[in-house]
Amino acid sequence: MIKCDKCNHDAIIYQRYSGMHLCETHFKEDLLRRIKRTIRKHGMIKSGDKIAVALSGGKDSFLLLNVLYEIVSVRRDVELFVISVDEGIEGYRDRLLTRASSFLKELGLFYRVGSFREEIGRTLDEIVSMGFKETPCSFCGVFRKRILNRLAREHGATKVATGHNLDDEAQSILMNYLKGDIERLARLMPLRPIEGFIPRIKPLREIPEREITLYGLLEDLPTTVMECPYASRAFRSDIREVLNILEDRHPGISYSIIRGFEKIRPLLPDRLEEEEIWRCETCGEPSSGRICKACMLKDRFLR
Image (tube, rainbow, N blue to C red; front, top):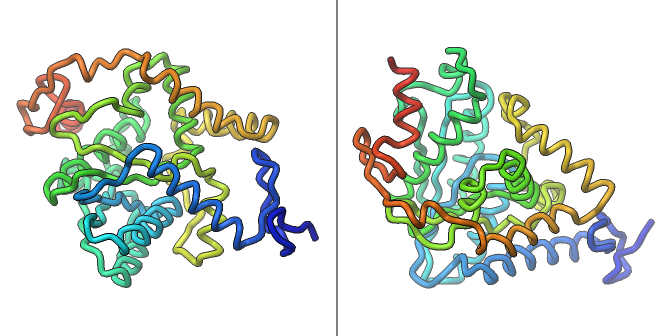
């Protein structure tokens, strides 16, 4: 049995990007240290913050909540509460949110759930059944962001914490670059607050998905291998396959992608910083135009 590089115990993981074999104790310490370093590096948590944790019910968001709860429990100057979105995906989101609710009862945290049904009058399953040419993710992403932002704002949040991991971040950067979507690329790391939008923080952005899964199993967090039934239809699914191949052949390439992005981000034009922020004439939410994207999409399937 291969031994841990930091002690004489059996190793449970080999980090190809670092060349380290780690035992359970040192693996956990390493992962938590890197999450806390990311929080400090980007100034994600400050005195007076009220953080809304976006809990999907998956492994990433459960780890995120677990770590933030540990940090906030020893601080009196930061508050924490939890928000979720029920898109209306039968047999998937309902099961995950049931597990999330049970977990949160143990922590005693304030919890609110918003749904597509309440917000836009349709579930995602119903929207998909209408046969639009866009992928389900095209609708889901817009409405999820709107609901999370509204829930966070209504309950006084200063920041929304999401469970995006290293794989997610690298995929988003590469995906937007290949699409030539510089505006979306810039939005991955806003340079200044935008009125009406609650700032997002991503404490797990430097942790590989594989390590999050392992940590969840070791800590007996309510992890799951369930994947959204619509995920395979998205462009992101193809990008994930490509990146997995590249990471296997060139360990650490995902880190290189986000490090490179951090260097070029200040050089990217930020149209949101130059444009006037409107209030949507239909719903009153912040928008880059007279009618927000959510209302434009909603109008299509409610006609």
